[in-house]
Amino acid sequence: MKTFFFVLAAVVACAFAQEEKYGPPAPYQYSYATEDQEGSSTAEESTDGSGRVTGKYTISLADGRQRTVTYYADETGFHADVITNELGTESKNPADVTIQSSAPTGPEAALQFESQRVKAKASYNVPVYAPVHARF
Image (cartoon, rainbow, N blue to C red; front, side, top):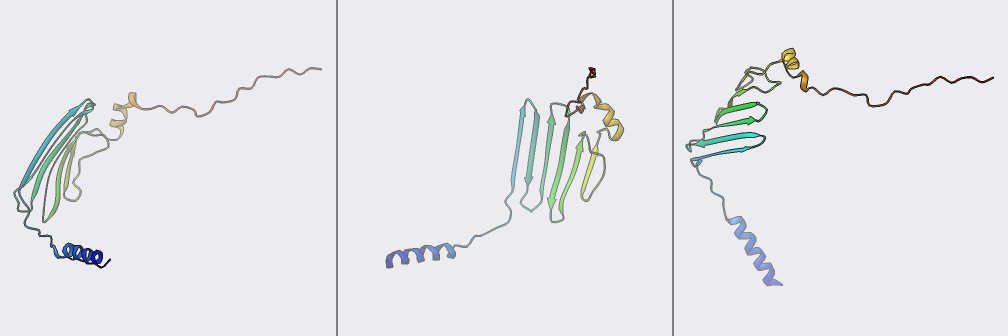
């Protein structure tokens, strides 16, 4: 039993004795592209090891919607430029992001996709009353 506790204590001591060492960020670069029946997407990202990360991704759907995001992140934070034609978006510049939208807004969007709108249906059947003839 003493041997078991000695081995256990040695393992615990080794686990605490190992110190994780972190160095400066290593340069890296990656990219990918994919395509299927629903659309396609691409992405790329890189850093030179200084702590600044730059990248870009694009999503293109079969129905014509598209979004491209170009970004960088450094000691000042995350900054992105978004170019899209997705419904419900509008051009604006919140925080450190710029959004350039070519999507129609408001009434234009409603009219453009009126044919695709789901029409509401009654959730119950209205009772039908037939006249009853009185017998005397």
